[in-house]
Length: 327
Ligand SMILES: Nc1nc2c(ncn2[C@@H]2O[C@H](COP(=O)(O)OP(=O)(O)O)[C@@H](O)[C@H]2O)c(=O)[nH]1
Ligand SMILES: [Mg+2]
Image 1 (cartoon, helix red, strand yellow):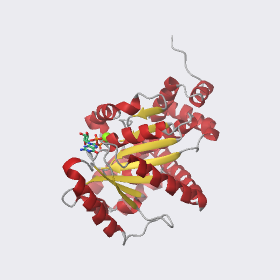
Image 2 (cartoon, rainbow, N blue to C red; image 1 turned 60 degrees about the horizontal axis):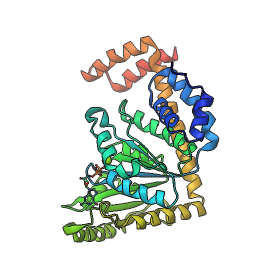
Image 3 (cartoon, rainbow, N blue to C red; image 1 turned 60 degrees about the vertical axis):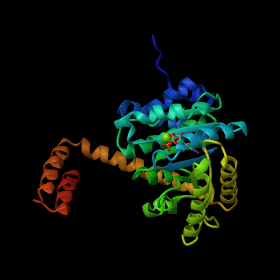
Image 4 (cartoon, helix red, strand yellow; image 1 turned 180 degrees about the horizontal axis):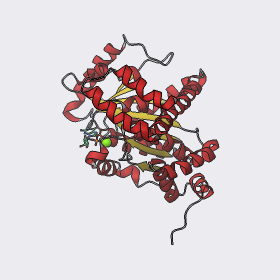
């Protein structure tokens, strides 16, 4: 019979980097069930003293730009330099297609077979916010297991990029060169968030395109303010395929880390990450408690219909609903 693991079993397993227990702990974090929620929150509390000792790197970009391929090579390079690397992915679409999991596993072949790396595909259930929140907790679990570089791959669609940005120390955008693509991130407002922009697939016939795209982007960025003091968003060319440019990218990240540790920015970032987490978790809990009330739940669907049919003002509808809570 399977023995049920206690919080201590989980904690010891994680801290001693028992991969089976680590996997189970992450499954626990990803669960939506209330009963698991209790255990996972206790576990998080317990492992907290072992967390924080890593650099958290977010990598975003449109599907197909080469994120997974890049992470495979980049991660392998880091392992060879003595780091332990965990890769988590955030892909809200994976519940629909299921495809990314297979993609990630095959694209990260080199990395996934190494004992100093740990790769976790995106949790497939739940809303976007839900998936991102679980990732935040998974980061801590991986840190407690001794991974000192945590990479979070996110598909560059919508809201989840912002969420991932709020949980990492370094945020990187990967693009490819092509008709107007260099500027795609500027339009989307993602560039302002990026600490570095990498233009991938700088190989073969495409190399020259990439190099000119790098120049175009550098020119455009000169006019943008960056949120980290004394840091200008770096633009780099890379070929994940031929591994050209990988070393240089790590060099940039290390420089950024040094700068941020030196001027307290790193500490401030971590503080911000914690407060963001607190706010998000609190919002979720409040919502849960709110909708646990049967009357509210019922009234919500009634009011939603009225809002849809434009029969009631939204302010009024919200007031109606919250009045029940205030009673
Ligand atoms: N030529 C070239 N192809 C690449 C490079 N990096 C990735 N690819 C290819 O681009 C496709 C998408 O890569 P993938 O890593 O799955 O992209 P993701 O969706 O961003 O994770 C795959 O066929 C890769 O082999 C590169 O540096 N050069
Ligand atoms: Mg991918």
